[in-house]
Image (tube, rainbow, N blue to C red; front, side, top):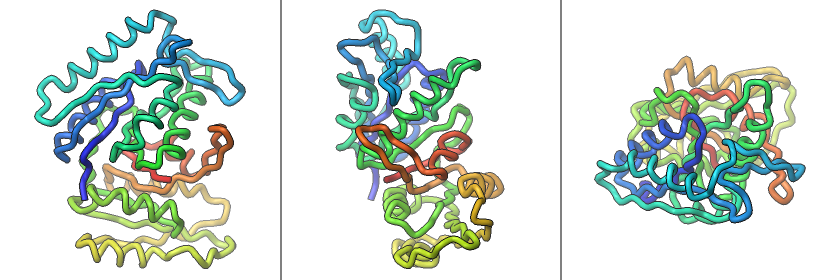
Length: 283
């Protein structure tokens, strides 16, 4: 199992250049085609993010759609000019999340940037970008790789930490990460056991995940972390990944939503906000 096609979201966030560089390295490493996607709403300037209450938030000062498209295409062409793999460029219609859902459902991996606030005095842009990423994760039906803001991170996936809680989402993420796991130098499966939490009998224990990986020829170590019921599981997972020197975190994504008014689960939200490691999320 491998990735045959990857789709990377292109916008004008500060980390877009680094995101494209990392996407190119990933496509080259997996011998996959790379598709760059810009979303343009015919009724808006490029990169208008929608809030849950219907408000719009522009990522950059308003300018012509044609100019925005030209700059985005130039960035993508520059990043892929020496590519030895197939590349494609697409301009999707509608809001960014709508374009990603439409174009991304037949890609093997979607690549997006970690949400960040453009203005230090306002969290509005962070919330809008977070909602975009949440919509893609919960709606695409494809694994989503969130690349952190730090351009220096590695996306090799040689040291992988898998967050496991025995759920459907955990199993989905574990399966979707196989292209990395089969070539990783080390794989740690981490299960957080919270005191006084109601036991879900349908949840598969971490030992089952390790056994499943073994059947795929992957040696994994199981770590069970005991914590209070009120513990921040996402923070525990990030701390473990840091101590292990991980360059990829794999985790199921949880949330509920109505008409894309998505509410992410606590672990997923913590990872989106604070990860400094490339993070693969699957729903």
